[in-house]
Image (tube, rainbow, N blue to C red; front, side, top):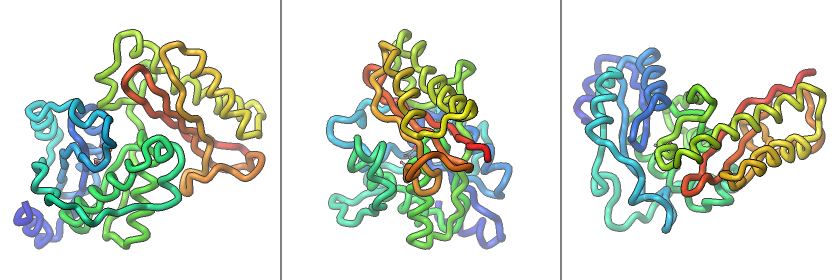
Length: 276
Ligand code: PAF
């Protein structure tokens, strides 16, 4: 693999990296398509990273489809599919991890305190393996994207991070490998997340400027859905993930939510424009 990358670089080609945990869906394929359009050599990775799962989470049952993934990556014209075994990525004793403070601690970090250190560590390793590149991540995991951007800036990785828009089902549900766990009733209920976020954004368009009123409205819509167990709703600055100090000033913000539908916790988010 190194040989292939070295050869590509000798020829002056640009590398597009698409890190994934597999069970590829249209969201992943949109990242591969963006990398294909922007760069000369597309490297996708598939590795279900144990470091980002806490004990009791779904590491063992995380959906996997290696043959299907390989076929999809080939159809997406990926040049190199890197699917390492555990031992290729981690030694018996992992003594070095990457942890991004502050931005990692709210929202997902509050529910899953070790999650982002696991993500940052494996992504740092993939960046070290791939070398200078453009790396493509979905905005569905918006906090993950912000954490990776901060890590790249703080540690001076020679990587340009590209965030790609969420891909949704026709009824609005954001694509996620974990949607595979939903029962038919939960699947029918799950688009409430996008519906609620849009209702929050509509309230701002109608003149609401109190961030907590916007979050309360979103939370109430989700909580009214019997299949959903609300975890959080947040309205934040898209770069720092800090909530605004007072009322909403004109600008761009992000509305994020997470809720459990039976076993899976689903995440969603949308941009929020506050007009001047
Ligand atoms: O978003 C994911 O699939 C994973 O968190 C990532 C970025 C591939 C790291 O394991």
